[in-house]
Image (cartoon, rainbow, N blue to C red; front, side):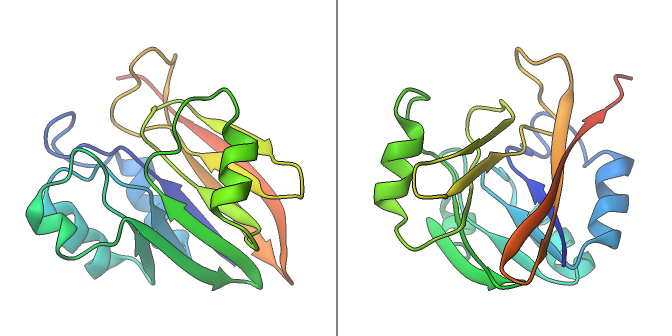
Length: 166
């Protein structure tokens, strides 16, 4: 199963639309996961219309219209991998232990908020992934997103994709 990981898109505040490479990744994915901070319901509508399947949560910058349609925490089983999605996980210090305690029995936690790509494994095996932001790099050298391959209950590949500066 080919999965696209997004977070912190901030459309249309940080960008008018998602970059073309991200839309191509949407078209190629079996599932799109969005870890919040959409900002406008129009992007949710566009992704729901275009993605084969969408799993998303709201973030701290998402207003009532998005919160009415999205949960704070989402869970699914994808390719046999038990996935949780949340926007915020708190400070980087102690993140792995804190998230493992908050999401017991899960294999993968996708999160956002910081705009900083993150890929670690907590004690007990929970994989934590933050794809960064495809539209607002903040202090990062590039805007980013991730893809992952999930199969037979395992995360078999994760790739961080840089979006070329324009």
